[in-house]
Structure formats: C-alpha cells, structure tokens
Length: 60
Image (cartoon, rainbow, N blue to C red; front, side, top):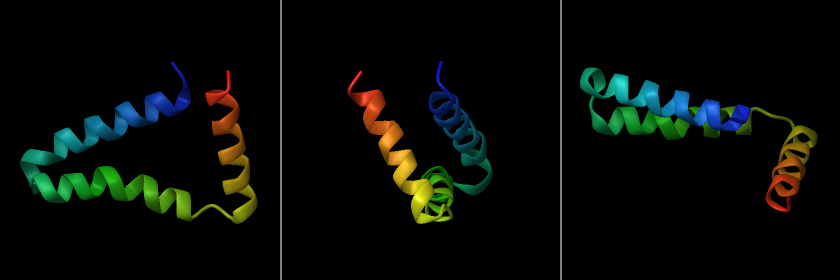
C-alpha cells in the first residue's frame, strides 16, 4: 500500500469518526479541505515535483 493510499484511508476514517460529532457537511469540509490546504502550503517547486511523481506513477 502506498503512502498516498494510507493518507486517503486515514482521512476518510477521520471524516467518518467526526461525522456524528460535527455533522455531515463539516466532516466533508474537513475531508476535502485539509488535503487542499496542505497542497497549497507547498512551494511551487514542491508542487511541480509532486505532479511529476504522480504522472510517473500513472505511466507505469
């Protein structure tokens, strides 16, 4: 299992655990917002590297 898959599974698990506590829409916001903020926190060279690595994995 890749690191990205583990992160996705962890994010979904946290969102599902938070759902009864904070509601559906807020937990959906957490599941989608946290990865988006993390991506935007990267500097441009790190984003290019991440996209390049992602494309290489797709072309396998």
